[in-house]
Length: 173
Ligand SMILES: [Zn+2]
View 1: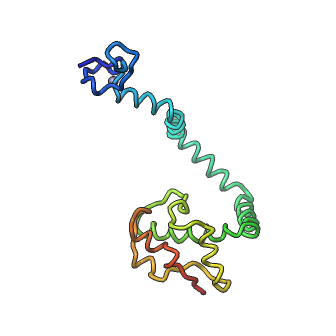
View 2: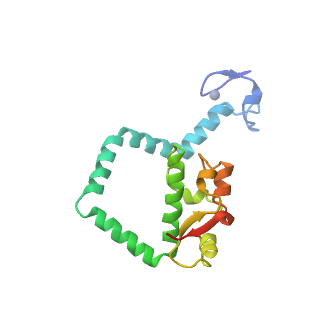
View 3: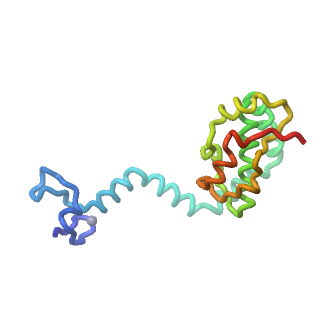
């Protein structure tokens, strides 16, 4: 047994990383403390940023709200979205996919934190390729509909089945 130089707890030697240069062949701080120190060095800035965010959450929310509601903000957003739709063919796909997934998750009583596309079983390029055969004017639909493949997370097997390229089809209103 040996006392850790950081937390002071007495622990078996196996709980210390090896260090050839030291007298007992082990590091002075235990594995748990070594890991904690590493994580804090590596990710401490994220923790601190999150702390700051939580401390200032109310005022940050107020600020975001005032930006959203300032005169002309909506028109500006719409203009940017139109421009992006025109110049970036994948943008419309992203909106369409994001909206469908958000609706389905909302229906399951879950919120989703953006970045839906990273969870998709296809890339936007694959989707564009897949949809290039469809006559224009479509919106994205599912052959087996979403309400028959209920999912409450991106890991759910139904989610992958629902959003497999084979299950996507064009819908014309
Ligand atoms: Zn320790």
